[in-house]
Image 1: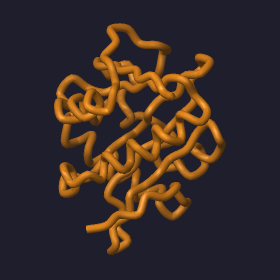
Image 2: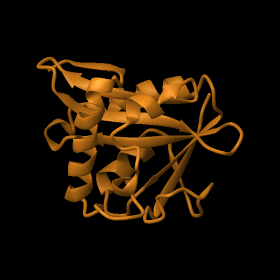
Image 3: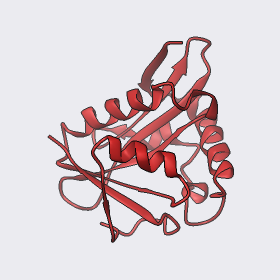
Length: 159
């Protein structure tokens, strides 16, 4: 199946919020300190609409959204964050996550020198995926985020 990777539109907001919430429930992360409590979860088309902040969705030929990923500016010069990368279970392992991260990192490399991310200890496949894509685990957070429950952190040099 082919997927279209495109920037998020207003019509996608609720659909991507549902995908993210379903994934958070799947991994027991439906609580404070994760994306679950993010007040902007259903407003991505408004939040990710500047050169520093972008969000892309993966759309199946049927029109169904199957995942997404964002790049957000952090309060550290030259560092962005890979944000809210989630795919529905049915498309995991198909290469769509690779297309999403490639899109995000290619874009990020135009504006940033490093990319940071936070995830959860029980998201083992995600950790392997990030490491395969050149992310290196770091012990301490680079910056205080609202995701205090995320206990695994990574950084990647861009360019």
